[in-house]
Length: 98
Image: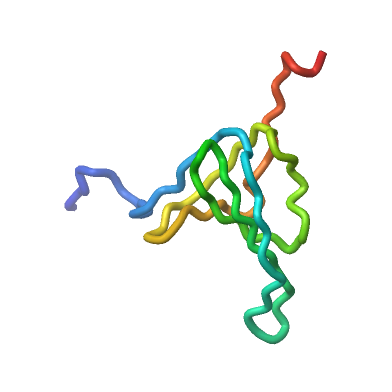
């Protein structure tokens, strides 16, 4: 039986990356509705540590204030960086809680 020396299983050609940084700017576009029956969505353009990202959300307001430290998974495309659905969150630093 032949064996694959590089391992078995499927590997994505473009793995998702993880980023963390301070939100510098947020611009919102929308609402958009691509086809009948699809709920409306908004496109939020975020600037995090001088890099631009795009996040699709059903909410008009992003809910994250400017200056907050965030973390998220994203995928790079030929045109931009797209943040994964439900992966955007605020970083909680235990030293700032007290």
